[in-house]
Image (tube, rainbow, N blue to C red; front, side, top):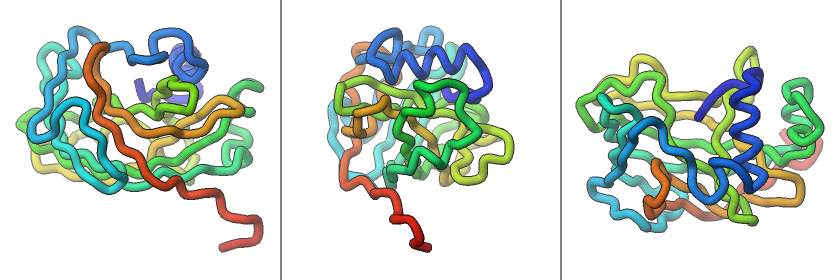
Length: 198
């Protein structure tokens, strides 16, 4: 579900998730015949930002992913950070968040290019998928896992999320399939820097 801002299909999916309607509302659409379980972290666990969870999910019928995932920071951004990168008024009016995560492949499969089902849940309860801005947007190179991402590989990533106008972030949610009791991360959200600050 991490796709570029320039692909209309991804725009439709992510905007539906943010608006509270469509497959992203309340529970994300599962990729293919995905199933999920956790190793060391029980479904329904609530974590603080900076804490790690060891997770297992099946992004494809022949791929089982095992990741150690930490949501390290959630930072609200000024809307102007996406000037020139949005396609419509709804996106331009959305509130951007940059989310920093740390991941380690603790399984046996190469997870290169896979989308980790980590969503931002807003104060209306809607789930939003991360965006890949692409191009030379250097502020936050959001996207799928690097390719390759073999066993023992580690990565720190920045992910871009959009919350509809008037909303705020509630927590971050790992929910790979509908009906899965999500694992969540919450904590203090870093506010945008004041103008003139370094």
